[in-house]
Image (cartoon, rainbow, N blue to C red; front, side, top):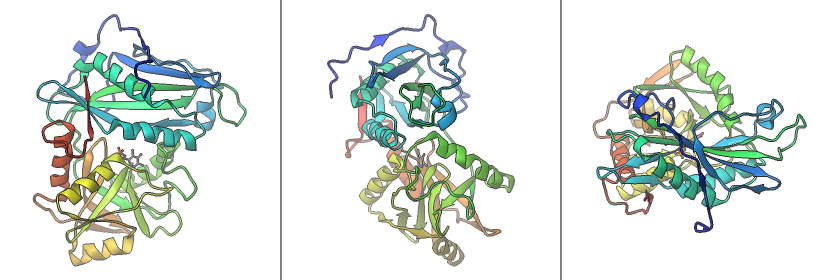
Length: 355
Ligand SMILES: *Cc1c(COP(=O)(O)O)cnc(C)c1O
C-alpha cells in the first residue's frame, strides 16, 4: 500500500457542531461529524482524497446518478475502548467489497490506500465524535456515485467517493417479526444482489412496506426462481438454528457476502457450535417450527450485529420462536462485540487500531 506517498489536503471546520449534539439520544444516521472525506475520479484517474468540513454536494441535473443509479456504498463502524483507543473491524474487507461492487456497477475501482488511509485520517480528526457509551459507535458510510453529466445511458466519466460518519447509539431492534416473501425478489441470478448497490435498497422498500402494513417489521427474501430457499433477512444475512446446528445460506450472485456473517461463522466454529453453510428451504424451517426443533433465527449485519427474530409469517400463518436463555444469538453477539470494542483478545486478527 502506498501509504507514505499520500499527501492529504485537510481543510478543518471553523467551528465544531459537537456541542449541539445530544449523545444520550442519538437516532441512527441523523447527526454527522464535522468533516467528510471527498475524492473525485476525473480524466480517467482517481485524484487525491481531501478532508473538508461536512457539507452539501452540488450536482448538475444531468448527473448520471440521478438517471441510471450508478451508486454503491459500504457500512462499517469505529469503536472506542475504555482507554479511548479507537478501533476498526476488518476494514480491508469493506474496502475490497466496495471494489467488488464498483466493478459490477461499471464504476472505476478505488485505490485501497485512499480508502484505508483516508478513513484513518478522517477518524483521527473527528475522534471526539465517537461515543463511548456501551453499545455506541461511529457509523461510517463510504460511498461512490456517478457525478459525471449527460443523459446518455452509459457509464459516467466522473465519479465521487465520499466518507461520511454518524455517531450512533446502541441499536436495539426490538422484537423482530418477519414475513417470508414469495412474490417479490431482492435479487436474481446474474443480477447485482451481491453488490452494495443503492438500487437494491430502493427495490426492497415497497415489498417491505407491504409487510409492515401487515404487521411485520421485515421481509425474509427467498430465491427469485422457486421462492423455496430463504436467503436474507431484510438487508441482513440470515442464520437459522435447528436443534444445535447453526445454518446460513451460501453466498452467491443473489446474496451479499456480509462481514458480520463470515465473522459469526468463524466465532461459532471457535465456540464449538456446529455450523452448516448450505441452502435452507422454507419447508424445512416451517417443519422445524412445527416440531419444536427450530430454536433461533436471526439477522446479521454491521448496524445491529445480530437481530433476533421472534416470529416469522408464512402463507397467512405465524410461527413463534421459543424464548431461549443464553442462545447462540446472545453468545455470538457478545463474542463479536467484545472483539470490536477491544474487551477481549483478538485471536482472528480482525481489529485495526487507528493511532
Ligand atoms: C450490508 C448488507 C449485509 C450485511 O453485511 P455486513 O458486512 O455484515 O454489514 C447483508 N445483506 C445485505 C443485502 C447488505 O446490504
